[in-house]
Amino acid sequence: MSALFKWYNARLASKPFLTQCLTTAFLFGTGDIIAQTLSPDAILEGKYDYIRTGRMCVHGGVVFAPLAMQWYRIVSARIVIPGRQSAEALARMVVDQTVWAPVGITSFYLSMGVLQLHSLEQIRQELRTKWRQTMFQNYLVWPAVQFLNFRMVPLGYRLIVVNIVSIFWNAYLSWISAARSNQNYEHS
Image (cartoon, rainbow, N blue to C red; front, side, top):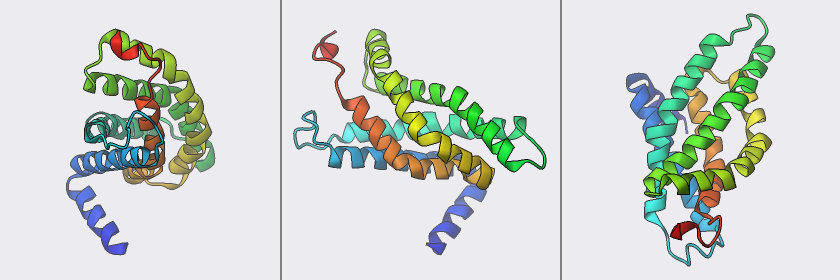
């Protein structure tokens, strides 16, 4: 594990943007692999959907990672409470969960819709039927994770911490995104 950590640190130091984008893409894809492997969903009918995994990788590496990297820089620079690390972490987590979480979840459904070549109306329907449930589930997982992330993890490693926890979160997102809202959804 030490060799892997040293290798990752070297890549992070030499090419931080590329390293974080590729790592995020890989771990988003891993979440989808878990979702498809464990899902009893009739959608898969015993078949693995490689394109679905590809969409998750694209969203993670091209959309989520660049936005999240910038977000963590902004939050770390703008929310500073000297000498009060716990208060600072709590403030960052509250802002993260009230600003970033809704944006991040919306961007996920928008990306998936665009990558599936859905119409704007289909994407709106997806957001109407799944966004609220996803936000509720988000609030069961992410406030504690983000408080600890902002409190204990240096800025350069916050995205990888989120990515590791996100393996299972992304499995959930992939599963809920693949589930059909209703039978007429694809025909509209």
